[in-house]
Image (cartoon, rainbow, N blue to C red; front, top):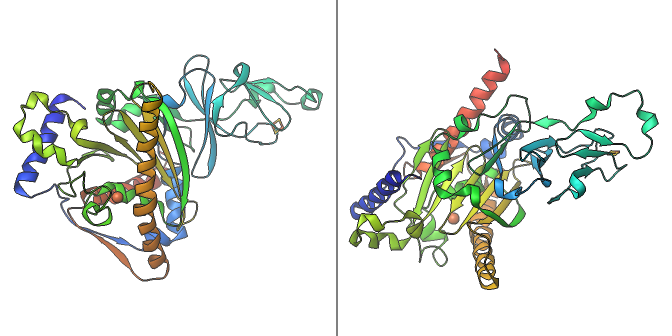
Length: 390
Ligand code: FES
Ligand SMILES: [Fe+2]
């Protein structure tokens, strides 16, 4: 983020610490239990959010050179991101135009600059055009090969981030969608980051419950008493909505010491984990030398799939540094996997059993309030657009 924004954030945090205050939402929020348990509501989210909104699917670092690909699913739609020979990233439906087999799984480098279907070896170039039918071509003589390229999906690479929409044809206007987040990502130098490691995990809880654990630090003193609380404050929470997104640094205890330092020496990443909620279902968190991209989805109301990708700001220098990043990633997975997400699984069991009709979110949980208001707004505005395409 820009220097003036960084300094003003630190000043705000120090003022809150001195006064024992925090940023607050204008009003508390009641969330109906059905938002976490109702298949009809999930279908709405699938249509308007997971498939209908631009999703922060990956970083530029995931596709560092032409021929690199990354397979993923958004709202259950299998997609393949590929960096073309022209350097552009494209998103394709990950379904061969012959009989629909996925062209690739996981991540890798397309051998010889070609994507080859594992079923009958139809072969596509990196821009998605059908390049070869190795056997049985005569059987497709009636087809126009020009029409048998991979189906493009809207995709935009900007400021080190790759945005993808699983459905619809309207292009993604990244500058418009990201707003001032773009400036933050540029200042972070996200475009120069390097992929390090990734995990996919599954949980018995709605995706929103899991994502919400990042959006408030109020629980740190209690749920993370032994792990996070020795290093981070529970409050203040400082949060700036940026359109549908949210920027919210979580202060390390060392931040309090900045009071005695000249402002010119202040650096936010030295004393906070800076996080951005990237609407509708992703989260980017950055420290001094690494960043994580989290993405949350639910295949069923009370299940979630979490993608976690870890990136380093510079190439890993040696084994010692590799071990440090391995440990940092393991710690992130351990705290969320042993403390945050199991708590949400228990909450989900209660919701499924009718133990609570609604969840009550206070004004100090400003990130959670923003999150739910954003989702409601995106669902409502997209639903309106789809009813009335004009
Ligand atoms: S399904 Fe891909 S070549 Fe047959
Ligand atoms: Fe947590």
